Image (cartoon, rainbow, N blue to C red; front, side, top):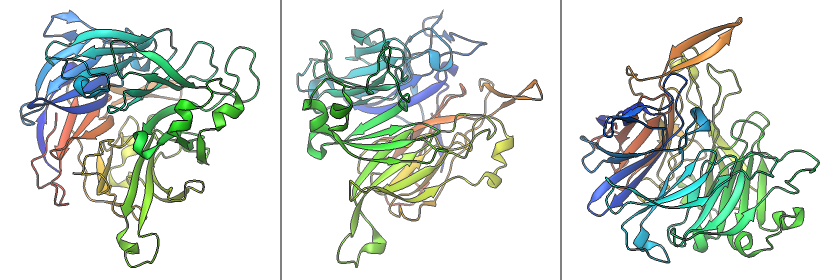
Length: 448
């Protein structure tokens, strides 16, 4: 894989890149974690003011020369207690209740709520509305651009669990209403029993697919849940145990050692090995990615898993993948080592052919998804550290030990075949590319 271009994102810790074809330009929207102890609010050189981390907007039309356009300040706070983190983008004119603006951006505030902004010109984003407030935590959301339905990961003040799902109708992001809420049973004060496992994120296939895939647990005690979308949206709203189970098609409990950060569906995937079989030549596959969260391997290995969900009420794991630790002595290099997420674009250039999943170290490794029963790594890319790369520390014998290491968070792709990766440790994002013929690295690759 080949580096094409870079942007330091004003040395802000980055979480989620979303790439949007906006008019005749390609725009990257990047959600940021909060600031650090040393630099809680980096200076924006464009405004010459210290601004809490929020959302960066970068023109990547020419991937070799990305142009930083604007920074939308987020919530004050450090690490996951601040910033904006997640960002989703839809064309405003494509929403059911079209608005006369080319693009709408929906970004969560890390602990307070959601906000919606319009970008008629990406250089001049405008806040349109604050969708919800008073929430404990917000994170990895999903927005259906054809319906405007948004599955928002958040925590209400009376919930015992930190993150669960609320569903909003954002078909007109200037006016939002809570459409449905998926809660844990008896979530309020006085509830008894085990506290439900935190949700990390959903992915919806929309009205046509009528399924929502949920991942719970992040790095331990994970669950995969397949939900009937129509029953979720139109079923009884009262969050009783019976009503909460009504939309569930199935669930798969993972090991206590692993969780589910991302659950990405790859449906009707042809399986070359089964091409001559009478039945089952194609399968519905779900890619399940754990999240490594502790430095220097101080937890069970977090990996990538593939599940066959063709028979929805009998999902089963079929394979797994991890970067070999010995290939780079990664446990000793500082920071997290293990999987974190996958790209989420369903554009034909990669969908059902390649899956790309960043490993916090060694940063980025793609493999062939056409063989989910036997995933094979076909290439990788490791960005270089810079003077902005933040330290990652552990306590050893009562003393703090710190090392500087790349910490790739999330990855995304665009329809041109470019791959974008972003760094948690303030280094900035990197994007590299693969060509459409299936040979990795022949297309000019980028690093933002």
